[in-house]
Amino acid sequence: MIRELTYNNRILSEQERAEFCKESDKYINEFSECIEGICQLAKEVSKSENSDYNKITNTVINISIFTSYSFCDCIVLTKLFVRATNPYEKSFLRGKLKVQLNESFKKLYGFNKKAYKDSYCAQLENIITMFPGFKSEFDELLLDLELISKDSWWKDERDAEVHIDAAKLYKLRHEEINESKVAMEARQLTDLFNRFNHLTAEMHRTLLNHMIARYVKEKGILRP
Image (cartoon, rainbow, N blue to C red; front, side, top):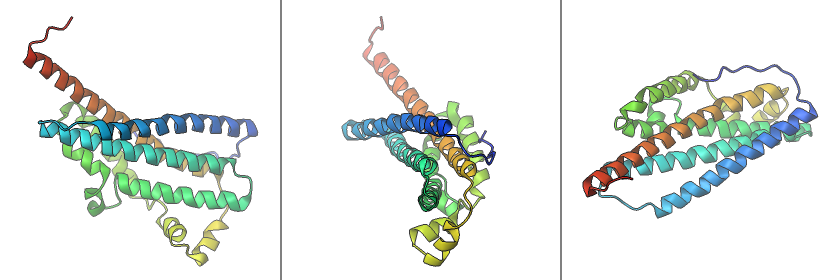
């Protein structure tokens, strides 16, 4: 189930702010290392005679790189937003975070059927039939994504920030900032990235175990 969007409108204390940043640093370090590992794997992975194996491996690698970058970028921007004390700096970072959230969701799932066809979610759907044991988990993820795709995900803010629309920026940058709301909106999407990462990792692990078992059987290797 998708995390319900709730927020309490309160301002973080200095201690809570420090703890939030510490937790953010942990995730940033973890996922940045993951990116390095996945990119290295992409360089070293050898092509197999099994076309299904190649298709699954390439899909998992592509999705993992995307979700790791998007997750890390969202966490970095949220951390900077929470730490900012200058009003203009905080407003600026809120805008850039909304751009990142909009673009990330568009790539992950899309906002309509046409965009979905080019999404990473569609790539995963193309191989999920090979993993019947994960179908229900994927379907649940699809339902959650469909539910929140009906939101605009701040398209107006995204367009104003990306195209530097001065008139719109002036209005948006002077809106009152609800720190709790902004942070929880980002959390809703990063939770989905985590679920995607877990699903693709488990699928790849299942594939590797299957390939190893088949190799052992074909070669007649006796396991200790």
